[in-house]
Length: 202
Length: 322
Figure 1: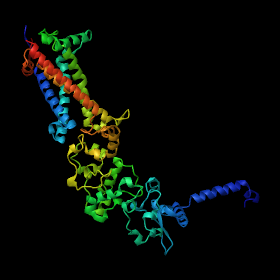
Figure 2: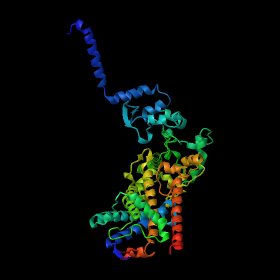
Figure 3: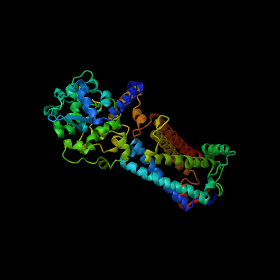
Figure 4: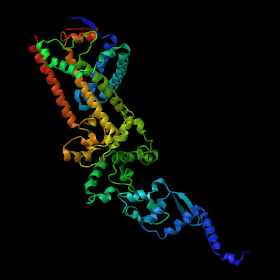
């Protein structure tokens, strides 16, 4: 039975919106600096990238602490026993079952905010990829703190490699994340819940 | 009186020797130095004759009337470090190959002191040994530079290239920039050419983001000289209004640095493996120019797979799901 669950309190919505906006600015200015896309003046792109990066890192700190304080962290906890099997089941649903009008194998409830695939990607992105982006980003902002050479390779080149690769993974996540938001009770339903905080179950 | 036996004994001999050594040691150092110089100078030939004064901080100048030797300090411009000179490209030269034979007389005559020293191309023009450095083209490039056009003949090659220490292939960023800074960060030398105070380099480059990284890792000429494809190092220094100020000139795949700082390495890398920016990637980090070819290909492939996957998913969702 379809029901409305208040998943997204104000603090999450503020964090999510700011995070999304900063991520978008970082991707655009990052692509502009690295590939000359969007024709943004280089010095402007650098400044926007730096400011957005700092705001994103503050945002992350806020998210990290609020997750602990509010108890939101429990939704990210992974039970390892049978996790990969659940992951596979969810993957099969997205690639096969969804087209056969099958019901989601792990319907969202008050206790289950994320399905196994969501949990896996969110934990990977928020607790591995984003921290790596932030750390390598700050290192690039203060290049003098980077080791001059690591295994004979300039430290700054390695840091850049980490930053560009994790940034790319983050960008790919964002594309898939936005697309998967259209998989809801209605294509726009999940976008609405980002504004009003209520999730409409199928 | 000591007994004769004692005076002739080995103990007496050692005592006398010991006292003599101590005595010699206490002779004032200055006198011994000057005397040593004086006695040597007559017998020294070639560079050694010049180096005995110019290779030292002090030299002795004899007053012809009183005969007194005055200890003087060698001017910083006249001082040559013999060890550096011995490692330089011009190490095999006699001082008088470039300097007037008049300098053989000491004290030096006014005529010698006002000599016109030749420039690089006086020797290197058409020089088959140094042909690859293209000295004639370098001179042509230099003649167009603000150094030549604004300061005319007062500005010679020697203003930047110290002939006694010059060493080819020593073109590190620090070495190169020290040539510029020897005037632009040194009011005394700057005033040899211009009678005004030299601008503060740090303040003038305040606008540069990551100023320290830029000043340490790129040469001044990257932005202040016009690129010349015919020579390895551009000598056409531009007026400040024409200096590179657009970040993308360097921060792009078609980085200006490939035509300047990494010109030699880029040519080698391109001819070796066709990998355009390998030189920059291996040497240093320049945002926008450090693109890894394989990562670029991988990222485009992954992006296409993701977009393709989403497109197929959308099509299947709209056609199959009812």
